[in-house]
Length: 196
Image (cartoon, rainbow, N blue to C red):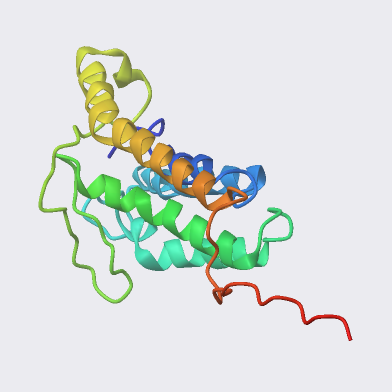
């Protein structure tokens, strides 16, 4: 898995790129939390749940269904998030789902249970170039931890910054006063009729 420091890269890139009018700060915070929440499944180890169980790490909490459930909760809480129900749903869904997607690109750990509860099958992405993070904070302060963080900077944060910047440019261009807006095109003005 990427570290808890890196999972927020996706909602931060999207949210900051779209700006405060589209993704208000409370919704941005909800997206960051949703991007980290799936890793609460590491608590399963404390209860003796085996690593291979769908209730263990990278299991059901990393599924599309859980991302949908978090998105539905966000839509119901849209007023408190100072957003529309649609933007809250879409943003939190993307943030929560991004967790499993990023994990699927790591070069270690178990596969991701994207399709739970419909299937216990687990998946990895076809390319696995993100260095898998050790579980816990202390291991990050080691040579391996530095390799993990450098991998995340290259494969997650750099693309996120670029994508966020491109989203920001697109958002600014659409909000320019002279920007063309979709809709009926007005033809040339007809001259006013002469006074009678």
